[in-house]
View 1 (cartoon, rainbow, N blue to C red):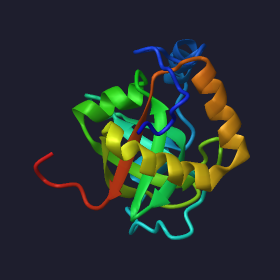
View 2: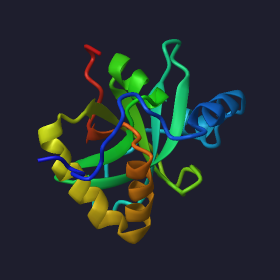
View 3: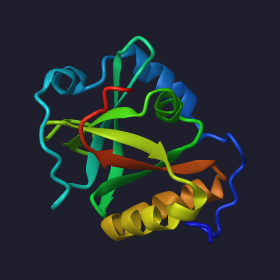
Length: 169
């Protein structure tokens, strides 16, 4: 069973304007990047998690790339839905290590980051992630996701498992 049965995504389709926005954002230092990169690591506290998370992925050269995302906890993990063709997904396929911190909707960090390992969820586990996100956000997210489904954007779910990064990565 699909997590979003009415969605009919077109493979590799991105949201309109995403490429232009991401190119502009790459030229401007991201808000909160310096604070997150140098902040002490916190213990993961998912109980009472705020709605937004600052997800920090890493480029090949080690440069941190922070992105505010809607995240929802369930079973000791955080779940995120994002475009499959996004830069963060490409970076996660190469390096699954991420830093996660609570943040405002605009990406201003509201706490210390913790380390986590991110993975793309297989289709059979997407329903769990969709339920967690739906329960956490309600109508606002439902309207946003409806618009993404209408535009037929190819989306995927990420699972963020808190814990120290293994030395083998």
